[in-house]
Image 1 (cartoon, rainbow, N blue to C red):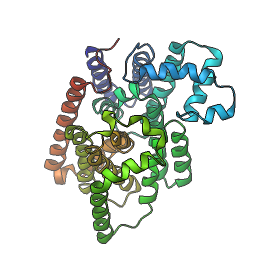
Image 2: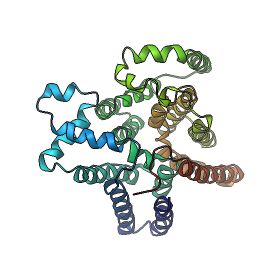
Image 3: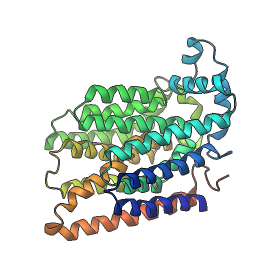
Length: 356
């Protein structure tokens, strides 16, 4: 546990220094490089860390044995991830080499994303750590890459580049099929929302939540047949309500924060932040019924790591007028993130504690 506390301390302490000298680019660059080294070493030098570690260990050698395109696309795992395994295997048949390379590339992608698009780099990295996304990247290696590509897709949507967003989501599905759920944000972002449509959407969400116990088993035997392996496992059992609490609170904070900004829902960045927040809340509620649906929640709640710093900045512009609301929201965010960090470490759902 001490390793992860040290990681968080490095993010916050070094981030505070980098923020004080934000006019000096080399300080920010050194900060990013230091975090990249820490994350790459933690991800690449681990042994047996993560509940899926043994699966990915075996998968690396199975991918190395692939000989034809048909073999590549006939596996249960997604083709882009298998292709990456195969390419590394051609140069080294050592899983530890692959793990180090994969970790380096994955965390480089995340850090470049936050460096380019976050309004507060250290806050984004703290949220990424506190709300378990770093732990998730140690366990769900395929989905971590898919989440990264979906994050870039959201940025494309905020800039009006829908085609680029769709392509990135499809590439994400090449690492984990579930990334396709992010297409919902593409569709919802094009709807001109009215009060009636919001009410209809809420009613449909409630009906779907009620009917999920019948719908999901049907999907598992049709379009989601690759996930039949989870039948009879805790993934298809009720999720603990506490696990839905933090994604729901993040979503609620974002919606409240947007309502306290000057432009509110008019900015594209705010609109897609709100869409991701609402979808995150909805999927968090669904995951209380079926734990496996929490995997879908990750694609929407992950965007909070970059949207919250921006909304926080936009709220701060009204600080003289609404200082109390801004400071209250700031305090709640800090408190919830600290509670989430401790809660996730103590519960260790992904088998990352202790580090070894």
